[in-house]
Length: 364
Image 1 (cartoon, rainbow, N blue to C red):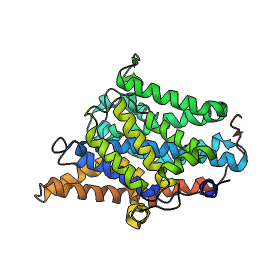
Image 2 (image 1 turned 30 degrees about the vertical axis):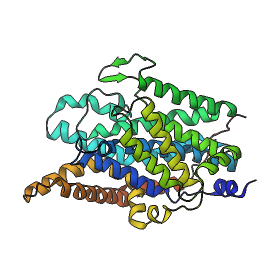
Image 3 (image 1 turned 180 degrees about the horizontal axis):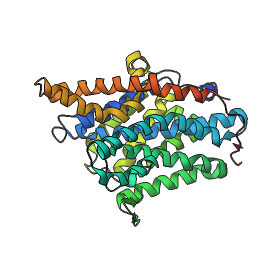
Image 4 (image 1 turned 90 degrees about the vertical axis):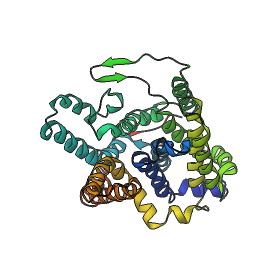
């Protein structure tokens, strides 16, 4: 067995990925607080694709977690997987939905919004045709939770030889729907419009595909030749930025495929070896910590944006370039408080294994 592959399989933590989370959430913060949006080079408008990068990262990590558990124990526990996800995702998410819903429905008296609230709790907000202000960003969390509900089952039930063809097929369908080549009718259901979003699931699928291929010696060898050199992250992250600028304004279809492919290669270049030229920056304390609490930053950043503008307005400051760092730091502060005094209580429960949970064995 190749020594590099053996080291990769034995690695339980990828140190550069907290730094990658920092880059992803920085793009999102830039997108919502960017004073140059729709002005200047097109690259300034692509901050929303930080969410896509999060999707690639999420697909990779979830699949790698399940594959590593299977490698250690011969199977993975589906119930334990969902238990860990629930304890990580639901507490701050439900806190946000509850507080924001009460504010708009009860305090502001917008009772007509009450009918939307259950769909946020059920992670269906990506299908809503209208939103409660501030909760619009939860569409991405709905996409992830829908994926988490299905993918572990597929991973356990599909024959191993079918995994790659199925992932490639699903990516292709997603991209072709986004390009308008495949026309899928939307299904209206009250305030929902159930449809296959334009390439939304593709980046998660691509992250999962990369994890599956890297878990095999042959796939790892190919990726190592392509991305295993120390300067590869600079090249592939640079390629992502080039594609941000050079692709058409409408990224649906092949532009999304190209950008998500570059994101996937960038991620692989960060996990395939123990270190690279960007590792010192990505593992630097403040950068890594910002990435570690990026989930909370994402949840609370629109609240922080409103508060930041209100505070600066009160003291007579109307400078969008000042508002950007102020609301970013405020988002970080809110996320830190949430993580330290609220989320950590639930995360501690993840370290307590359940009494007995059934396991699923991936098929041969």
